[in-house]
Length: 182
Picture 1 (cartoon, rainbow, N blue to C red):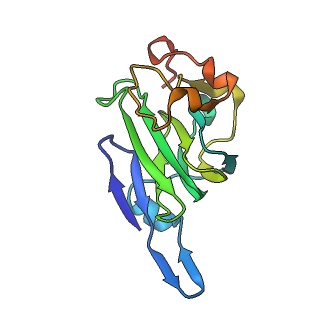
Picture 2 (picture 1 turned 120 degrees about the vertical axis):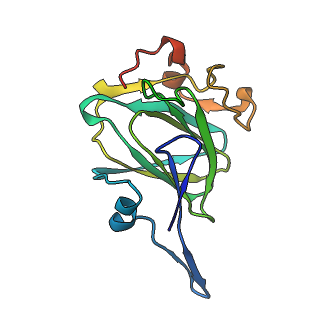
């Protein structure tokens, strides 16, 4: 595995080695020793999976408090634009976002530590997105910011009127209005 630093400290792209032959392929998606050697020393407590059609936008979410979540995200089928935004108080990159295309073919993962908002946009029908988290789900720790907050300046590649966004996500505050728990 290659661990690739991003412009935002602690946010890491993981590029696996893919072994292909006439039968198909094999990928190691997580290796505790490799992750620890690259500074990601976390215990994952839950795996989640979502299924989305093209245009579904989920985000921008984080979980804070006792069950603050770090996320190791990847795509099993399809393709997404995955976005993380630094909301760590005092961070030199506060409010900055990082975007990456994740797909089933390159099989890259993104490590998103606690203190980041996260969201993704399905770019293909029948997209299956999976992620491991470091904290159990806790509704009382949910925080979020609207996906189209102009201060985030995220370049979503599908026109806003074509996006499929939950009512809950449409009601999220702007970053400047969010009570920041980090």
